[in-house]
Amino acid sequence: MTDVAATLNELRCAGLYRELRVIESAQGPRVRLDGREVILLCSNDYLGLANHPALRGAAADAAQKWGAGAGASRLVSGNMLLHSELEAEIAAFKAYDRCVLFGSGFLANIGVIAALAGRGEVVLSDELNHASIVDGCRQARAETIVYAHRDMTALEHGLRYAAGRPALIVTDAVFSMDGDLAPLEQIVELARRHGARLVVDEAHATGVVGPGGRGLVAALGLEHEVDVVIGTLGKALGSYGAFACCNRAMGEFLVNRARTLIYSTALPPPTVAAALAGLKLLCEEPARVTRLWRNALLLRTELAARGFAVEQNEMPIVPIFVGDPRSAVEVCEQALRDRVFAQAIRPPTVPAGTSRLRLVATSVHSEDELRQAARALSKATQYASPQAHQL
Image (cartoon, rainbow, N blue to C red):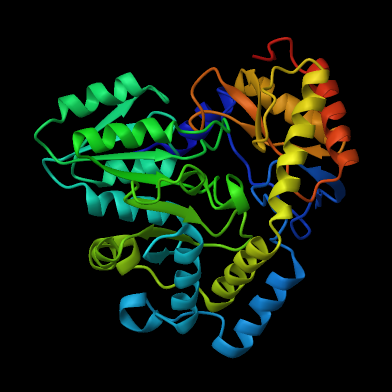
C-alpha cells in the first residue's frame, strides 16, 4: 500500500512537489494571482477566446435554453441537438466525414487508442507524446513500442518488428512541452508502406497551425492519409471537451467501442455552445491565427536578444530549459515577483534533467507585455540558483 506521507515527503525533497495555484479572474493576457495582476504566459488559450463575449454569451444562452447539464451519457439520453451541430461543424472544418465528441482530450486519447489496439496487436508511440496518449497505450491490450522522439528510423524498425500484426501509430502533431512538430509526411509514408493505422493528436495544432488554424494534417493535405485526428475544444477554441475526426465507419466504431465515450456523461450544453461560438470566430477571423504567429515570433526574438537559446519560428510554445527542478521553481517564483507567471514544468511531465518554464504567447498579448515578460525572465534567470542554465 502506498505510504502517502512518505511519498509527499519524497516529492518535496526532489523538488517535484506540486501545489494548485488559484487564478482570481477570467483568463486573459493578464490575470489576478495572489491578489496581484500578472502577465499570464503559460495558458493554452492561444487565441484569447476563453473569455470572449461571444463564447460567454453563447454559453449563457445555451444554459437558459438547454440547461446546465446533459443528464446522461450520449448513448442513453444525453445526446442533444447541440452535440450533433458541433460535430458537423468540426468535421467540415477538419475536412473529415465524421466527428465524435468526447468529454476531454484525455478521454479521447484513451478511448480511441484502447478501442483501436487490441490483444495481439502493436501500438507505436513517440516517446514525448502527451500523458493521455501514454495512458491510452497502457489501457490498450496491445504491445506498445515507444520510439525515439521524431526518429523515423526507430519507427520503421518498430513497424518491421510488428510485421504480420495489425499496427497503430499514434503521435502528437505539436508536442506540448517543446512546441516542435511531428514529421507527419514521413510518418504517413511509413504507415502506408507497412499497412498501419495512424492517429494524430492535434490538441496544440488546432487553431494554431496551418491556414486558418485547421491544423498540421490539413496544412500538409493529409486528411485522407490519417485515420483519426484528435483535437481539443479547451485550448484555441476557448471551451472544454475534445473530438475525434474520421470516416463514417470509424465514427460508428468509436461510438460502439470507445469506453470513455460510452460510459461518460455528455458534454454540458453551455460548453458545447461556447465551442461552437469559438469555432465560428476562428473561421470568421483567421487574422487571430496570424496575430498568434506574429506574437510567438516576437517573444522568441525578445528572448533570443537576451541570450536565451530559442529557435526563431512562429510556434507559440517556447520552452526555457533550466534543468534542475528546484531551479526551475526558483526561476518561476522570481519571475512572479516581476508580475510574470510562467509555470515551472518538472518530471514526470518532462524527462529528468529537462525541467523548464513552458512559455506560451497568445494572439491577445500586446507587444509591450511580451517584451516585459522577456525582460522579467532574463532577470529571473540571473537571480536563480547557480544550477539554473539555458540549453
